[in-house]
Length: 171
Image 1 (cartoon, rainbow, N blue to C red):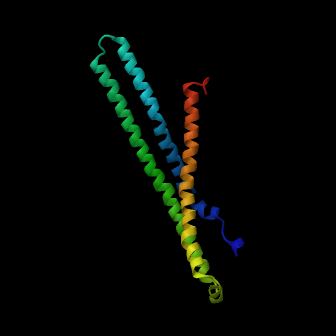
Image 2: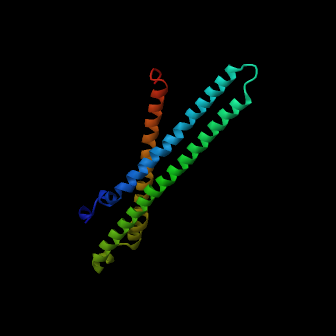
């Protein structure tokens, strides 16, 4: 009966650590993403300082140093974001696949305990739909749900924190 079926939480609980690590990776990727505008802002400020120190002819070396440092930081943050996105997918999507496997195994184990008469009263298409489509939907909800929820939360927190850090009065 549906009331004796384990809750989704029972299937998620064993994978709490990789899901939490995946959420932390989402926060890392968001931090790298949100750092890019700050690097660009600082680069513009540094270029303005170089230009104002020698208004007639700014030093090519100083301009090159600012641009190369900024470019290196942008590449580092892009690589950091790629790294954290990889970890996020590994942990969250991997946990979703394992949860899907556990649910399928539990369903199959339960189906093996049912009588032949029960199968005579059921439509095989409904059973296949539940075994394939419905469980696949649960996996997608877990994987993408954790990712999108963590991504939305992290971006909101980083945006609000960044705005407060830049100008508390305007925020």
